[in-house]
Image (cartoon, rainbow, N blue to C red; front, side):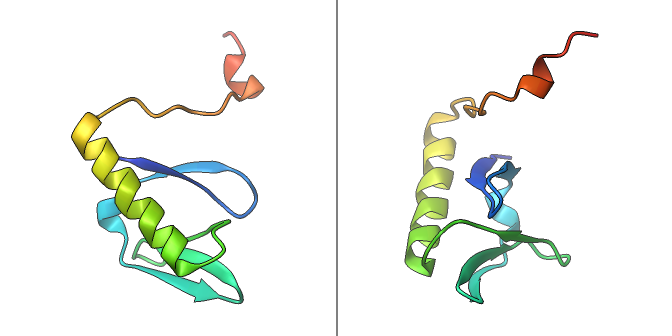
Amino acid sequence: MYFITIENQIGETVAINPQRITSITMNNDVVVICLGSQEFIFTKFMDLEAAVDYVERAYQDRKAHARPIKWPRNPLHNISA
């Protein structure tokens, strides 16, 4: 299973399994990635072409190279127990 990261509409980075994508659509000028089971990711993409291109390239890149995902720094994750 390969995950790709996408920034949602409010700026959070989410990891998704692209094989779960059932459709990519526009809703009120927002590109929405549908994962089935009533799960939707409202993205920052401006058009369908850019979203589809990104998903296809990101998935192929992960499959070909299997590099670790570069997560943005989150200071809340650096709290020691």
